[in-house]
Length: 153
Image (tube, rainbow, N blue to C red; front, side):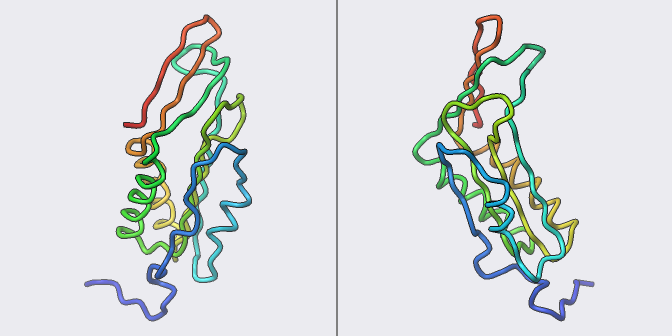
């Protein structure tokens, strides 16, 4: 039997995509969290991706992100797919480009849904699909002088 929802808050919001952006400036967890505030949401999931000091067993000295001009449009396509699959009340995602230091925020995503399980699943899909499909590339320089490009797609 299909679930029966007695309250409009159980459904997806009419325009749940509140913030989608790629930017060269520092990211704010508070900004993203505030963007997904919704009185009908019982669960909000927030994911923060930070620059770590190692990758694949090597020490990372520096890191930079760059993106294709279509990256924000692709980010929107991913967000719309998440909204179509889950009862999303509010969604936000921001990704940083440019030179970042260890500990800097690289990506922040958040999703609010009527219930926690939906929020967790929607946020996981959002970050996973964003990392796999949006044309954002990471250039890492390691302490041994080698470097590596890592692509989203």
